[in-house]
Amino acid sequence: MSLRVRLTIMISTLFVLVCMGAGMYVVDNARRAVRDEMQSTARLTLDLLEAELLRGGAARDPWRTRQFLDRLSSMGSTRHMRITIRQHGASASLATDSMTVPRQISAPAWFARLVSPQDLVTPRILTQTGMPQIEIELRADPADEIAEAWRETRGVLYMMFLFAGLVMGLIYFRLGRDLAPIDSILAGLQGIEQGDYQLRLPAYRTTELGRISDKFNHMAQVLLQAREENRRLSQRSLEIQEQERRLLARELHDELGQSLTAIKAMAVATAAAPDIDSSRLRVSMGEIARVADHTYDVARQLMQRLRPPVLDVLGLGAALQDLVDRWNSAGGGGFCRLTITGDLQALSDVVGINLFRIIQEALTNVARHATAEKVDVNLRVGQGNDVDLAIVDDGAGFEPEAARPGLGLLGMRERAVALGGTCALSSAPGHGVRIRVTLPAATGAETA
Image (cartoon, rainbow, N blue to C red; front, side, top):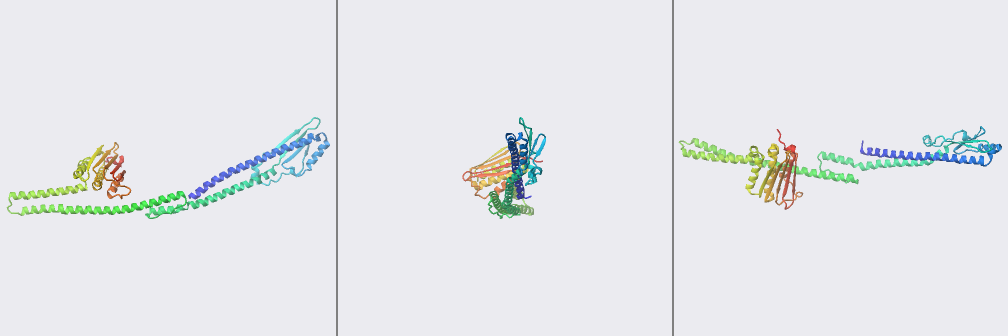
């Protein structure tokens, strides 16, 4: 069921309840008005009859009494009342049509049932010294009063239900117009799902939908920029991989290949030389040892670039200290101070290598861009093996919003996010750079 239909049903239900309550209130007022009118008419009629029979002296003269009753009987329609007068046990009932046949109520049956009062019978006994006892009985006939109440109530009820119908129709029509942009919003979301980040929504007149449109367009713009940035970084990553492979291939060819060729040549030449003396043999062996040492240094440098051996042999703490010592020895970025708190051995190998690479990349960026005099690296491992890493330098700094993040910073963020943590950078021109990496306890725990 659509939102338009649900809202229309809810509002219509509310209006129906309000109309029912108002109708009950109107009907209740009409019922009380009919009852009060009947009671008032009965009291007035009894007072008039009593005045005529007692104070007028008709009750003392049987002939005048008979004449009075005949006059009552000869009256036409008596509104609201049927009158019965008894004297000396005899009955003298008014015999007009209005007394013997109930009046036809010109109102709906349901309304007549709701507003009709209970059968109102009002008796009164008249006694006076020296005269017979007279009993008067008035029976209410509310037909005319009900018809009058219906004429007054009908207009109110019709106007009330007409107003409710108009309001519900207006609400249904207005909701249809105001909620029509939802279809275009859904189409826009479907386009975003399919990768069409250039899709934009128009400005809507409704305030709430206008805000949704603004947020949607901003989201689409951010996704478009992120896709372009990822494409650029992917291309740059592939270029760096190719450069690294080309560099490794050149190192292997120029250093290891030539060194192995030289060793082989010297070994073959020594073996083929006739009657070689011991001094010449020692010279050849020394040259072979020198080339072998050079080959080992080159291989060690390559292994250090791929993965520091000290990380596997001595652990994360020693690997970080070796990294900081070599960085300080290079002297290109000020002095770095390393502070480690907690048990690094409780961390898994995955967390260890990622922390090493994050610190390594941060120090590389300081050496390239910061011109800092000092760098503080604080690594803390909590009781639950949660990790908090802070790298702070006093370099030139920059404006983060104006600078495009490079591959190194994105790489640090990706490593932290991959471990379920966060990587936040704060900086300002002239105030250095602060990088904070936090990793949750579950990630930092050592796994079997």
